[in-house]
Amino acid sequence: MEVRKKTGLVVALLVTLKATLLASPFASANMLLDRMIVYFEPGKQPRQDIRVTNVSDDNLFLQTEIYKVVNPGAENEERIRITNPDEMKLLATPQKSIVAPGGRRTVRLVSLETPKETEDVYRITFRPVTGDVEANQNAIQLLIAYQALIFIRPEKPVYELVAKREGDKVTFTNKGNSNVILRNGEQCASAEGEDDCVEITSGGRIYAGQSLTLDLPGKGKLVRFGMFDGTREQRREFTFPLK
Image (cartoon, rainbow, N blue to C red):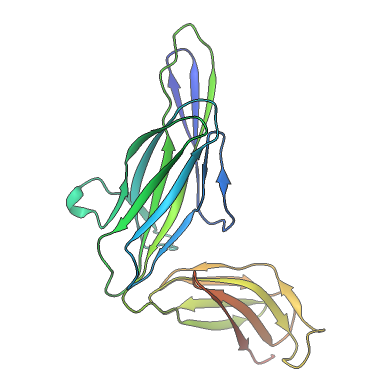
């Protein structure tokens, strides 16, 4: 959270919301985005659009910023803003725009390069910019910026999960080159029936080369998860010997 003071005792609060939520659309005090996660697939159009709607009664001064995510999902993850045109592999246009009250603006994303090995991860910030306020006014403006999560898939995207259980915890490691989301999990005593299954409420995204450790709710030897790659979900079972 960033607090900025401006002339006329205006305080602008800028909150960046991470795109780990999968539901859409997302609304703030002054704008709405029709999508927060974008996948660029190999062999398909290198263009994607995000539509921004101004839901306020004032003009929306919008600015976009591109950040390359280095070591996504790791403790040493970094988000590096890309400003040098020679370093840009992902474009977002227009970078600055004015959206009238109730109006819409399409921000076009263009991928300039397909990764050869591991998918590239970016975050694009949609940042409302406050205007000047007369010095004799006292006001508070709440400005909420959103970050869309962008994946540019390699030529042959694949996730490859291996699982290791230790006591009441299981660790999944993604040895592939593309991320996957674990969801709709359950732990069962056997594969024959469904009455002995317990829901696993936790889950999450596993980036390429990263691991995710989850708590298991029961003692069953069978663990099932839905694996969503951004396009489809596949069900997979993992069986662990009881100790």
